[in-house]
Each structure stands twice: as C-alpha cells, then as structure tokens.
Image 1: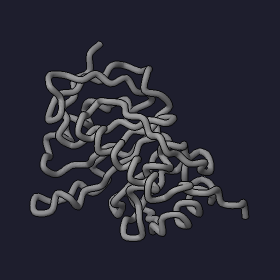
Image 2 (image 1 turned 45 degrees about the vertical axis):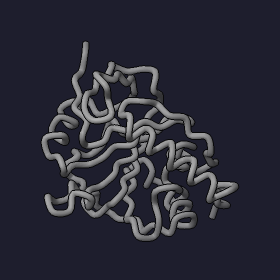
Image 3 (image 1 turned 90 degrees about the vertical axis):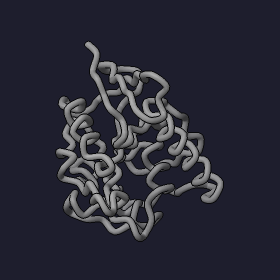
Image 4 (image 1 turned 180 degrees about the vertical axis):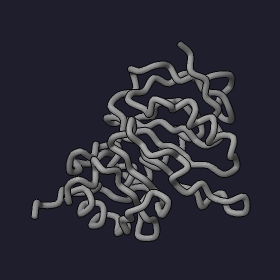
Length: 198
C-alpha cells in the first residue's frame, strides 16, 4: 500500500483559515477566494479540494466519491485516515460528495436535498474544477450579491444553469455547491439564481 501523504501541518489554524475561506465564498456567491493552507493529497484529489475536505468532513459525515476519485484506493484511504469519514456507495446517503469529474456529475436530485422541516439535512457537493478563468460566464443573483456576479468556471455539467435553477426552486431545500480549483474556492449555495449569458 502506498504511503499516505500528510494532512495540514497545523490542523487547527489551517482548518480555521480554510473554513473562513469557504464561509467568505458562501456569503458572496460567485466570488473566488484563495485557500491559503492546502495539502498534498493523492491524485486526482487537488490541493484546495483536500483542504476543504479536511475542514468540513469528519467521522459523522458520510462521503460519496465520484467514479474518478473512487477508481483507486488512495483517495479513500487518505480521507478515512485524516477525517474518519465513512464512505458510502450511493449519492443519496452522503452528507458530502466530492467530485473530480464535475461535467459528469449525477443529477442533483440524486443527492439528499433535505426536507422542509430539516433543510440542513441536504448534501454539500464539492466540485473540483480545472479553472476559474475560463468557460461560459455564469451570471448569478441572489442573497449576498448586490446586483449580479459573474463567475467563469470550467468544466461544469452542460445543463448547469437548469440544475441550479431547479435547485433554487426547492429552497429552503436543495444542495449547496463548493467549487475548488488550484488554491482557490468559490460557492454556489442553494439560494443562488443563475442566468447564462452568451
């Protein structure tokens, strides 16, 4: 078995800094926020994705890995070792889903969307994208956005606007999205309404 790479050098301070980055991104949807403390995780898990996972996932949060991440044992072993998170086989059973191939993401309704009484039981999807400076402009409106925010990100599912629109219609239910690329993070909470400009 391959040697497991290390987690955060300073777990408390690094997790706090990463949590602030994720909260800043969530409060200002469409804004790209740097993640200062990242880690060397087994590929294809990227640095920012790994940092977010170490910060948000623990032994009480079931995690689903997409087929690209689940193809080899390294990512699963690393997550289990550093977070204690149980890995699940079905998207519907996950509190967090980590996807390294977001263009092929299952429909959002395959994940837990919560209930009207317990909307917090919905899943958070961590989408590992390639870049934040490319792709069709995703124009966003909603809470945390003064007028409109524009985010360029690639790759995404080809029906991303329809997915986000349907997700917003479920509010207060629905999934939340955290996007990671390189050493940065952005967020698309369920409260966001998208419009694709061409």
